Every structure is written in structure tokens, then in C-alpha cells.
Amino acid sequence: MELVYLDYAASTPLDPEVEACMLPYLRAVGNPSAIHAAGRYLRTAIEEARTTIAQLVGADPGQIIFTSGGTEADNHALWGTVETLGATAILYNPTEHHAVLHTIEAIVRRRGLRAYPIAIDRVGRIQLEHLEALLRRYPKSIVAVMHANNEIGTLQPVSDIAALTQKYGGWYLCDTVQTIGLGWVEAPKLGADFFVASAHKFYGPRGVGFLYRRLPVGRFIHGGAQEREQRAGTENVAGIVGLALALRKAYQRRAAYVHELRTLKHYLMQRLQEVFPDVVFHGDVSEEGSHPGILNFRIPSHPLADLLVIHLDIEGVCVSGTSACASGSSHPSHVLQALGLSAQAARSALRFSWGLGTQKAHLDRAIEVLQAAATLLPA
Ligand code: PLP
Image (cartoon, rainbow, N blue to C red):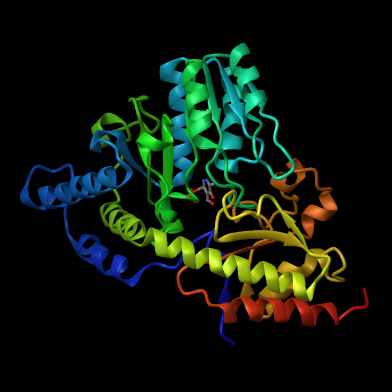
């Protein structure tokens, strides 16, 4: 049975060219902090990767810190802002990834800071007037609002958020894990104080990413002097080299890639509506307002409802019911509940996400499985 993989928002396949460029660095001996030739070879590769990434996102190389991925980068930005910049409150979008939400919870618990959710509309977009009202009351706040939601794909008005936050003297963390691989992130245009990347979301390796920070925010991981004393620990050299090439390729293909993803999204929505007239899409599904490679929906009349993810899996189709980090737990999605869905409705939601290599035939196969499953039990 051919596996149909429709879970690109959780992780993408490794690009063979990226894999090939990493191999020499996996095999090379040495520590990049060592001053001898073996160490210098690795150090040079790290600094070249940093320069490549900085050029792509319109930053200075010194503003890029390599991390173990998106989660660490989010933690670094949030803890750093509290501990070294003196933020006094946190204003957050309630549909953030757990990498942000659970870190905020820890900061509230350990530091006693107050955190306030920003009101969102029916599709999960934050209400700018509410953000401004909160900023007026709590000016020196950290504002955490992601670029595209990883479960429903809704885009946020990121440049407006950056401008408002700056106006009130706050700091803006924009989680760009889902959009940097679309080539959509440029530091000057975005205007955020922090944004983050994770290589395995754009055909790079798992376990490596970076934090962009406009200004230094101090350490998060303590130890050696790596990353200009901002992030201790021997660098994942092969991962960093792979990350840089994966990002370069992402920026090179961006227009064609986004077009391809959008075409598939349009097709998937149309087919679902034809086969299941009662299908309900969650979040913003418009072309301008959503991620082109993510679709979240439920089929209220389907008799298998919350068993569909498992059924699709048995039939060789990999999709998500909620974010990868929360799946395996029986908690219904906090994102869908924040949109006003009941716990039961949220449990029957499916997230399809696609990318390079996905064809209409793969989407057809998934729909065929959903359709066949509907005849297994009477509605
Ligand atoms: N932020 C968002 C929006 C994500 O989608 C993810 C991963 O799913 C993360 C953060 C965490 O990234 P990582 O897996 O690199 O820790």
C-alpha cells in the first residue's frame, strides 16, 4: 500500500540535495569552537550558513541565533524579553502553538507576570482594536501573535501588529514556523522584534532552527560561549548547513510553490464540498487570508467522526487531527475551541497539509477513504 502523506505542517520530507550537503559535515571530525584546521572548517560552514540565512530574511548575520528548532527559539525570545528587556506583561493570541502558550504559562507561574489573551474573531484572527486597548493599559508588553496558524492556516495582520507594538514600546514575537518556508518572511517588512524558523517544516532536517532577534536578549541556554554567548552548546553543524540550503531553496521557489499549493487547496476544497455537502471548514480559507498548504475541516454527518484520523491511518493516509505535538493526547484542539467549537466538534476535525510531491491523486485517495468509511456504519 502506497503511503499518502498529508501532514506537511507537522514535518516535511528531507530534500535529497539538502541531505547530500549535510553528509560531509556529519562525517567531519572536530569541534567548531576549536582553533585548529578541523574546527575552523566547521566554524566557516556555520558562519556561511548564517550569512546565507541573514541575506534571505533581510537581517544582519549577528541577529540570527541557531537553535534546536522552533520551540527553543520561541522559549528564548519569551524568556529573554522577560529577563533582560524588562517586559511587564504578555499579550497573546490564544491560538498560538504550545511552544508559545506553555512557555507563557511557565513565565506567569515562575515570574508572576500577568498574561492577557487578545480577542479573536470567528476565523481566529486577532482584533487589532483589542490589542491596542491592551497595549494602552500594558505598554511594555511582549506581544505573541503567530504569522500562520499551524492547525487552521489563518494568517494574522503581522505588520499592523508590529507597528502597534512598537508604538507602545512593547516587543513583538511572531512565530513564523509555518510561513518562512513559503519565502514570506523578511525582517524589515515584518517589523517584528523576534521571529523563528524550524528546518523540518521546509524540507530540511529535524532538530535545527533559528531565532531572529532585532536586539540581543541574553542567553536562554547557559554554558559555553557559542553563538556569540547567546546560546551555549556545540553547534549542530550538519543541521545548520542543511537548514541554510533548505531555506535558500525555499526562497528561490517561493512564487511557483505558493501557486502550486493554492491550486491543490482549491481542488481539495471543491472535491470535499462535492462529496460531503455538509463539510465545515475551520479558520479563514480565503486565498489572501490563509496558508496555501493547510486545510482544517470536519464532516458533521460522517458516522466515524472522531475516529477518522485513525481510519485514514489504517488505510495508509497520514493526516492530523490536531497539532503533532498535541496528538496522542485526547485533548481536543485548543485552537478550534478558541474559535468557539465544542470539544466534540473539535475532536472530529481533520487537518490536511501538503507540499512538494503532493498530487491531486493523493487528495483523491484521501477523499475516497473518507467516502468509503461513510458507508461502514449508518449515519
Ligand atoms: N511553532 C509552530 C507554529 C509550529 O507549527 C511548530 C511545530 O509544529 C513549532 C512552533 C515548534 O517547532 P519545532 O518542532 O521545531 O520545535
